[in-house]
Length: 600
Image (cartoon, rainbow, N blue to C red):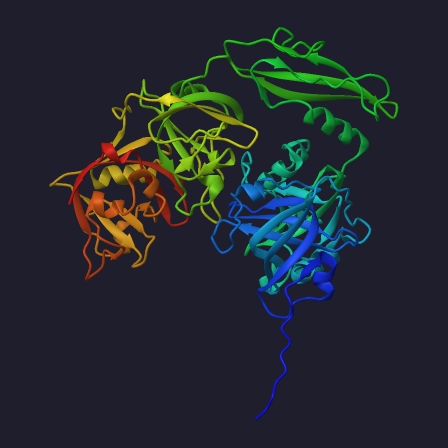
């Protein structure tokens, strides 16, 4: 008989400093940790949100992660999570992950011990990234530096996209004009160092932090900027090492840029009526700041008063000031939206890229990229007078989740509701991962700074002007000239049935759509190397659970067509919309299943 002594440590409250000096040795041990929130972060898909918490006395920091799963009782959509602000001292109970990025996750208890606590970031001990050695060391040892503050000195920056960046794109960082696109590190440790635009817009309260500079697009070479940026190293993916700037104190620009930021932050992106705040003094400015307006009759530069207009108008506000004996002029754009919303038809006819818009329409269905990435989820809205449609992304930033959104006032939204949308209109959409650019995918993007208002229920939905696709040649023509965000009516007949295939034997799975009668394998379902498809889980919001069986007579997930599993032929009408193109799929969504008449 051998006696073994095993010490079971009590689960007691620890400060952040005590957590590291008395670190649990067992992976995913339950811990109770107290610290002050010094930053709030998010990943690209919003599937993970984090608090950066700091020891109340010492300098140690760690992240507390909140996912959307039910692993913990508290998720990032809960009221407890949403109520936390920087400066709050919190007490969390969760699991301590040692492997990879050290963090506290699966939170089951979250308490606010005190609010409005003063705090400071550990600038003195920040890891300095100002040349090849620092970047390489960090890339090859990023687990060591996770959750810690780093200092980027005069970094080279460029965008991760070759067109106007959306919120889900990145600002890449490097130490020369090309390294940002090449990545940092060696072997399997190569990552892009970058700021996620959406995360920084939320943390810093707007997009001035990157729009104030003329940052080059992808493949145009990066440009160096005279700025010192302190940021926490947080999320690691196969591609990116994501850093988060917690507040403006960590974004240390030159004096003249600091003035410009202050002026910009006081101005709205869009406004309908009221007044704009035209700052007249600043501690760094010698004398007063003077303003002029490109349209004094719409925004008065003396009073800031906004006069309602019959047509939306972009106004240029020009500030003139003196800093250290030098005269400077800075221009800012504010869009005054017309009192009456424009129609979707007018938007599609005359809308310009990155235009602030006010548009009304009827929700015709929910649109997804097939991967449930939150920032790429949204709805299709329809002009009932003409049947024209446009997609709206990012509604979850205002409330609710995919399939159960709410408007800005918390009212639930559903298919058939007429809504008023204030957002930004884009003519193209960036690529998803290694997939192609979504050229011609026009959409309205909604962020937390915008609004969506429920107007009421529509009497009916106009499906009269859908694009009809009824045979293999027409399906090929659609692949050759992709039409995003437009109603498409797939018509299966006895002569030319619509064929269905399956991508997996497990749910969720993609239902492949094709008209090729000769298809006996996956290659036969493709058009220009990709497959038109409907994802089973993302279309539940449009057509209900197990819609693939109820609508199409497909009892369960399957792989086909193949030598042993033939394609399924159906007849009838199926209304869909092309939402996204990935590296393998033309991802479609069902539009208002009640108008579809399909038969096995």
